[in-house]
Image (cartoon, rainbow, N blue to C red):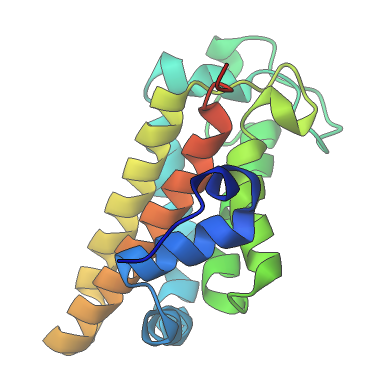
Length: 193
């Protein structure tokens, strides 16, 4: 039986990632499958981003988070929820972020910088990243991760891969998305008293 330093899991993102990856079984073979999927996923990323944002804008509870000024966005923000459309410049700005997220998953080395990136993805949806107006509730983040998982895994099922490789690729992305979901959830934990 391995001994895990549980307080360190909360304080050290690299240690947390290594623990999760080992526990879930996310290793070099999974990373290789994810990176080799670039030829199939890359051209489909715009479609996956559109599907995700159409879903997010179908519900006021998720869409409302695209009304406040987004960090790095300098154009006029939407006046209200009713002014928000999938083609609004601020939504396009956010779509670019999701597009880059998918590109990071397939194009980066899974090293210490990638771990910090996965952690940052969770943090930027909370006031902990510096913008008090950005405070996406955990339930909405879980909904987002569920949609991303669904559109991505559905897409993989449509790729021209043999059954075994398709299953292995699906499993690899599934493990990675569970790790990502943990790196989202960790920023919503209340400090222990």
